[in-house]
Length: 50
Image 1 (spheres, rainbow, N blue to C red):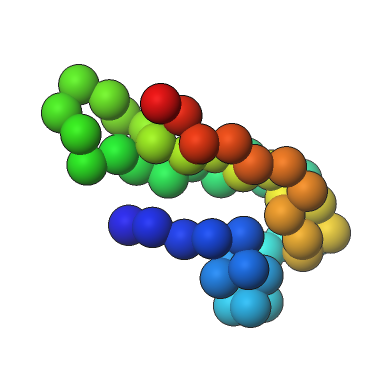
Image 2: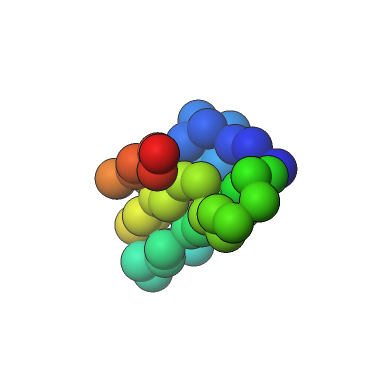
């Protein structure tokens, strides 16, 4: 699964309360590839893990 902040904001399903969004990795031995923080229905912070 892959999503950009714009993709998540377009869906309109982001809650008003703060959320930590974790996107899983396809790489063996790595369980997460990206994280984002949302607040008031918008992504306010993100990072790709390497």
